Length: 107
Image (tube, rainbow, N blue to C red; front, side, top):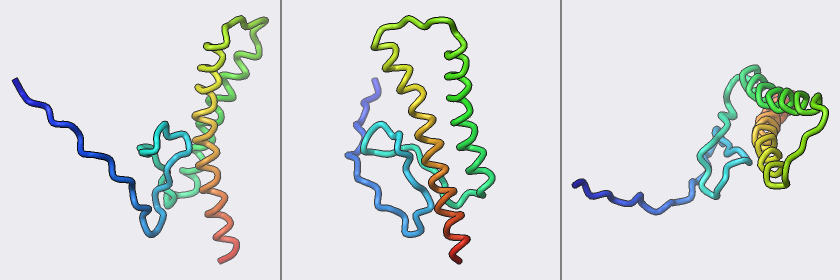
């Protein structure tokens, strides 16, 4: 039988000098695994943010069209988290777009 070896201990990441990759706020631990490429073209970044925000908007609009929604607080809490994660990701990406556009207008 194969012996498993544990993962090495986590060493916090040192930010890259040019800040190319920014950790998303919605990472679920202090060891980020999801990042935004801050050097990606602006249209690609905008599309990524728009996609996440529209997905949540569509879910919320569909929910609002229902006559009544009955659920317990645990389901409501899970649903809120389901909506909050992609909204936060979209806002993080829009922050990158805003910083890039601001830098272009200054430079």
